[in-house]
Length: 115
Image 1 (cartoon, rainbow, N blue to C red):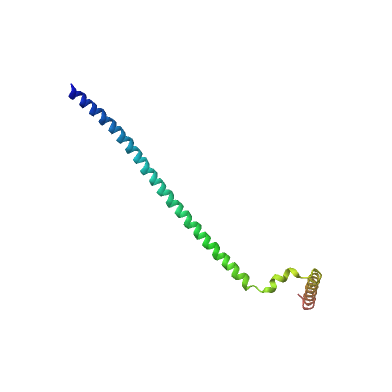
Image 2: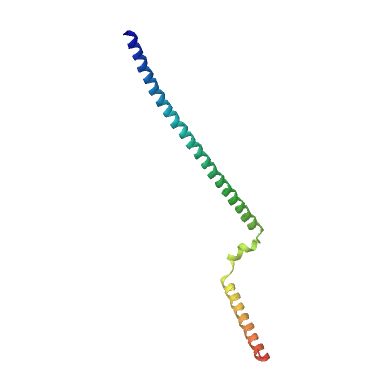
């Protein structure tokens, strides 16, 4: 009888060990799955980081090109806002008069030459 009780006790201990082992296996499987998910996320983040680095480089190149372009522009271009409005108006009026004169000259030539 004592042997039978000892066997029963060992069977119960074995069952408990199996349950603990199954629980540990489940935890281990979940951890492996989570590790795979995290590795995939890291790959996605690395791809996003690469895209952002490429965009940053592109924007830096565009900025450098724009800065270089502004360095090569004539310095007087920045003074365009300092034009006297009265002289600007007189220039506009002169240009309009010249256009009218040219227009009349063309009409007279057409009239003379049968155009």
